Length: 242
Image: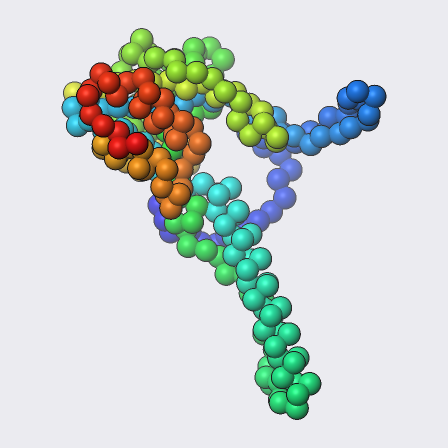
């Protein structure tokens, strides 16, 4: 999963997932405009395995995260090159010889691990004939390998994500599973280009995991752990190490 090569950035002229728009409007008498992306709504599921008392998460490479890290690396490289050039120029002015060859600033690609994030099991709402619960059930089966009825999914809440750019709605569910429900290793649907690793986080390490900034994760994952700590932990009488 963490071997990424032949990276090429090209214009996106058509996509079935994102459509860019610019809205023009008047707000309190002032003309304004805003650029936004139209996208599908989504579902996510906080899975808790009652056999092993752990959360079942997914770990996958996210190109958008990777490109953000590349931009940061490129900026640092450019700044470093500028400082080097300033130093060389200063040395030349003082009568010292500058390097015989000048190398252009390079922007090396960061390691693939820079784009890997921990997330809840989730998926797009792109099947109008299915309920949100049924879509979530399918995602749990495909990504994490647990076969559970849709009736076992408890709705936590819904919220708007990326409100400045996308504004789509995500509906979050909670489900308890056991080892008996596990029918496959999960990993997503290869036909859809998914390459997912199933990860388990012990209950007693959950809040430490959530607040560890060294572990890249989605906001929904952090929120769901806090929700569990506030609403479900007393049931299991186990500290979530908050």
